[in-house]
Each structure stands twice: as C-alpha cells, then as structure tokens.
Length: 367
Image (tube, rainbow, N blue to C red):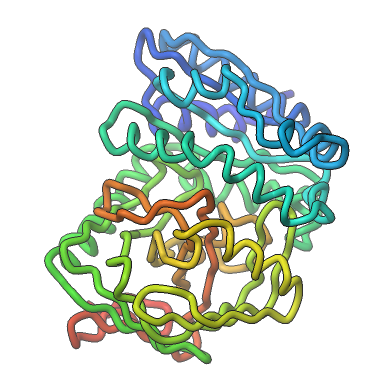
C-alpha cells in the first residue's frame, strides 16, 4: 500500500511548488531508488496536462564517469541537458540515493572540470528563472543512506522528511501559504535596508544589501522550505565567520571551516577536515571566493543537522551564505560554476543587526 504522505508530497510538488499547467514540458530527474515518488510525480504531471519525461540520475554512473572518463568526457555536456535548461518549462529533481558518499573520493580537480563545463547551463537556468520562464523544485525521497547520514532509523527519517515537507497533512498548500505570508512580513521589513552585521561564535561579519531584493522561499523551489535570502553587494563583505556545521559538496564533507573576507573576497580560509578540497573549490573560478547568497533559515520544524543541505540550510535559528553564483532576481551579479551553501547556528548567543537595529537574536526574529 502506497504511503499517503508520498502521494500528498507529489501533489504538493506538481500543483503548488511548480504549478504545472496544461502544455508544460516537465523534466523529472532522480535515481531509481526514488521511483515511488518519481512515479507519483509523473502521474500528477499527466493529470495537470503537462508533458513529463523521466531522466535517470545515478551516483554509480557519475562515479564511473569520474573514475574512467577523460577530461573531455567529464566536461562533455549532452544536448538533452541543454534542451531541458534552455527550452523546458519545469524541472523537478528528486533527491535520494543508495550511497551519499559515492563521490567522496573523487579528486577535486575532476569535480572542477565538471562544474566549469556546466557553468553556462547554471547561468541559463538562473536567468530563465528570474524572467519567469523556468520553474523548478528540489525535493527528497527518504532512503536508508540519507537516514544513516542523519543518524536516524529509516522509519524515523521518513517521519522527519514528511513532517518537514507536509506539517499539515490535511492542508499542505494552506500551510506553505501561511509560511509565505509570515516571511513576506520579514522581507518587507528588510526592503530598503543597507547594512547587515552578523555576530556569533568566532563570527563577526558585515555586508551590504543596499539595492538588493530579499526573496521569501515557501515551498516554490525547495521542499521542504523556509528561508529568506538575497545576494549581498559583491565587494561589501568584510570580517570572519566560523561554520558550526560541516559543509558538504558532492559527497565531500568539510568540517570546521573558517573564512575571512576583505572587500567581498575570501582572503583566508581553513578547515579541520578536507581542507585541500576547500582550497581547490575556492579557486574554481574568479567568482568562487565571493558570496552569491546570504540567507536566514526559518523552519523551526527542522532543528537537527542531517548532512543534507536541502534540510540543513532551513534550520530554524541558522543563517547560511553561499560561495559562488548568485540569483539574478536578488540583484546579485556574481557568476561562478559553484554555489556552495555553508550553514552557521545562531541559537546560542548569535545576533543579526540591520542598519543598527537588532533584527535577530538567539535564533529568533525580534523585529
């Protein structure tokens, strides 16, 4: 018997998050282990009048590509991938694999070859999204591998995932609309503000948001959701930050990251684990040492670290920044082949000041 929560999640993704319309061309991507949710999404797209196609994603084949492929093969972009990003209306990505560490031993140089090859497509996706031409959402399908990363049983992890995505099983759309309404209040308060000062454990960071737009995320691109974000003025970031949670990228877990910024650029960096990967990623391209995003997590239903950024960047009481590409709709002009989110807990003594006013204290908004 199908889990009713899975059916509800599929309906929420198709009819709320990306709001598939009659005639929309829809690419659905995910690994075979996520087939139950992929099939439910496929059915809902058909019922909405869309034209769905399922594109298989596999960490096994990705590992083979990096292990046996030449540089040209690793950097090759298939035409079908270009067509989806340049021509399709909707993309739905289902996360969930059998081994989250499949790429953990891939040399960082090879990762960079791949990222650089796809930089233009990422830029295209962001530009089309900004113009309203492309809608996308990323959502999880709970697997044993993800449960192990989160240090939970599969049953407990399933409960965690579905509770985060559909806290109100009877009216999930109504729930996320209420989240949107509350976050819109925060976004309106931030409108027209100029300077942000973040204080926390080993953290004293200043940045400008002058002329930048904050976006409320309430289930329309990520599921689960819960954040407000913008793109800081590129050359404005100064100070230092310590990330209390590991930063995970393509299976590489980098612990104890400390970054120092001067005039927007990372000028000093260190990590307690996988420091070489951090250094090489920072040198991916000219934009990799600058920030493309500053965001505050607002989902109080997510309190524990799970090693899945889809959840971790939403932790209520946290903020995160992303090195690399920024979203054009915020006003960001930073371009890069990477967009690497790093999360910092502010629940124990952290503060965010905006134009000299205390906005956020100990993980709560106080405005």
